Amino acid sequence: MSADTATRMKREILEIPEAVERLLNVGKTSVQTTAAEIRERDPLFLLSVARGSSDHAASFMKYASELLLGLPMASVGPSIKSIYGVDVAGEGALCISVSQSGQSPDIVRLTEAFGKTGAYTVAVTNDVTSPLAVATNATLDIHAGPELSVAATKTFVTSMVAGLWLLAEMKGDADLLGAIHALPEHLAKATQCDWSSVVDAVDGRSLFALGRGPSWAVSNEAALKFKETCQIHAESYSTAEVLHGPVSIVESGFPVIAFAAGDAAEDSVAEVADALVAKGANVFATTNKVKQAATLPHVRTDHWITDPIAVIVSFYGMVEQVAAARGINPDAPRHLKKVTETV
Image 1 (spheres, rainbow, N blue to C red):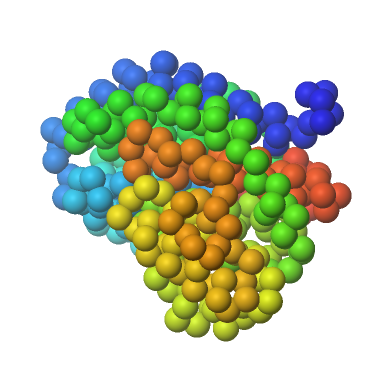
Image 2 (cartoon, rainbow, N blue to C red):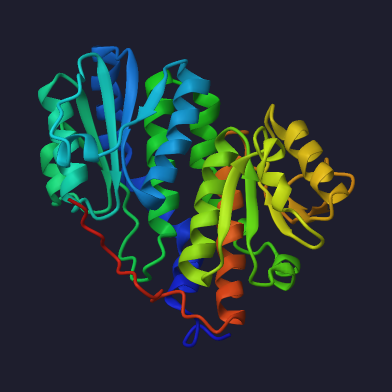
């Protein structure tokens, strides 16, 4: 496929390394200034406000906060304020609201409510003039550039990077900061990983996306993208949960993608992947530790917590191919539009 005939989604996937590099080059002052203000406030816990892909980015930040800072992070449903009219206590909290457009009224209203009850509020957004950005104490511009495809790719990755970067600056973790700044080169390699074996295996029936820890956050994103761009039902589970009940629907050839990073959960993810093969599933995994499942080409970064960022980039390239194979335009999924404003 030539550059002229490639989908917008494909072109935007290939732009991810450049977008991340732009974020790292231009976003330094705002990230470091915001991190310094947060350290001075010394929050006791974190809150997130987000929906869709942005909520998956927030889930990644949750694991990063808890694993790196030892600070719990909870996702709060925007309807708490917008539908039920309840003000939730925010004293002592850092609230991170993630929205590529910054337009959805329910996200804005809950963020404002947290600010009024004492939280320090941060917007992670691609529009620094948006209502969400105006409503917060600080704004982190993800610098993704225009994203025209309905399916979020650049904005998801740059949101992950911006949030992780903020947490790394809060901790003063030199190793992680170095790994974050080395990401563009790794992500460029990730765009070239060949996952065509998965394209061939996805047959239109339901499938599982699996992960654990930070990789579970990208598993959630993967399941959404199958539904959003390919009209294929997909469910995301932690590998700690899938064998407890969901495994009952696994039958011969049932497609499964297990997302693994080079972290403490890798062995357990590999074990579950192999266990599902024994039950008849057609399992693909981003780890060399599997014995029965098929190992997918994957890029390991300079830190275990940045590995899932590279893996989701490789996934995006594959899921765009699945959509094309099914005759679906991933740039304009049925029933969807780029910005969904929920009340």
